[in-house]
Each structure stands twice: as C-alpha cells, then as structure tokens.
Image 1 (cartoon, rainbow, N blue to C red):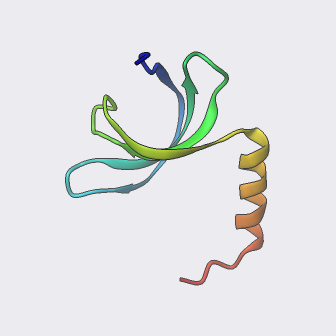
Image 2: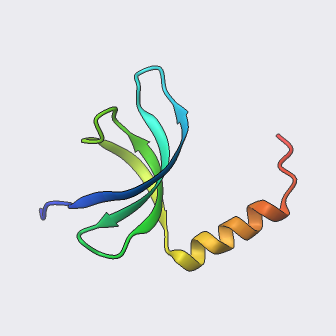
Length: 75
C-alpha cells in the first residue's frame, strides 16, 4: 500500500476536543502533494494520527458556506 502524504497548509480552527485530547479541526490540507482542500476531521494531539474525515474542493466549500449562511441552525 502506498504511503499517504499530507501537509496541513493552514489551520482554520478547532471545532471541538474529546476527553482524550483529539481535536476535530477545519484545515487546508494538501494530500499527496496536490492542491490543498478544505478538510474536516479528528486529529491526535501531535497530528500524527487522524480519524475519518471529509474534504471539499473550492467549489464545494463555497457551496457549503452558502448553505450554512442561509440557514438558521436551530438545534
């Protein structure tokens, strides 16, 4: 299996933190030396391990932003 290369190009912010110190973060991440994408996932405290996440290209991120800005999030 090929090694997965990643680089957190820009940290956008921490969304939450678990009791074990893992943080759910929004970052701009370059995967396998490709253009960075918006990435939301959980990371270990030293960023050497990661959980499952989701990535968005620029168009998807802009569409998500529009959707969230248009909604009144009533939880």
